[in-house]
Image 1 (cartoon, rainbow, N blue to C red):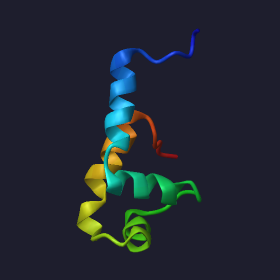
Image 2: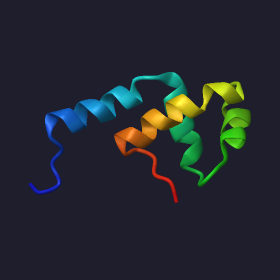
Image 3: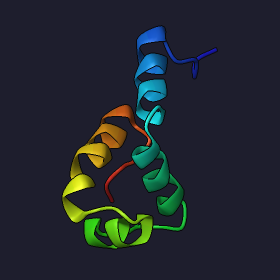
Length: 66
């Protein structure tokens, strides 16, 4: 059971998934790396609305920078 998340890590991931914009970003990023402008264009949201949700996804470990 070395790979089991503790309750705080699990809560962080679940909170990150509890937002429609973050889910759209994740869905789009399954296709590969993208810039913030590419993400905003493809998920249909304003450029300024992407960095914060993307940061939440990074902090949760769901998105990593290459």
